[in-house]
Image: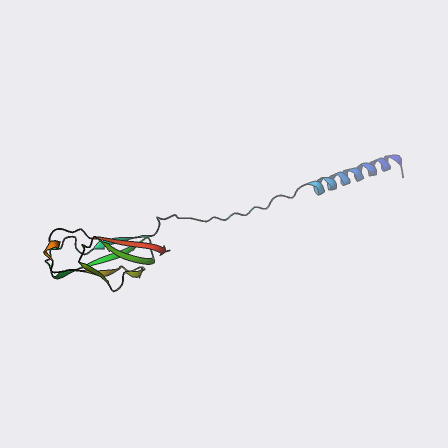
Length: 138
């Protein structure tokens, strides 16, 4: 083999080795995939409380009755406990059917009965406070 052929072959081998080495040492192109998630942050679930009447007139030796109704807001679901404060000494209160219930999508409530004894000492204005509390909810 002639010298120039040997030189040409050596150059060709160096080129091939260099090109192959270049490609072997290269990092392959990255493969990138994306996906999206839409997140809507809504207000926390809660509930509203209303009473059927705000003013009642009664007399000694009588029973009054009114309703307390809870309505869920923002898909509230949970256990509600109703309490009544402000019942004067000597009077009695009853929450029917129970002071605790589970509230879901439909409004739910209770009837509150307060019986005033035949006691003229109770004559006057009394403020009764209905409280609805939930510690177990979605």
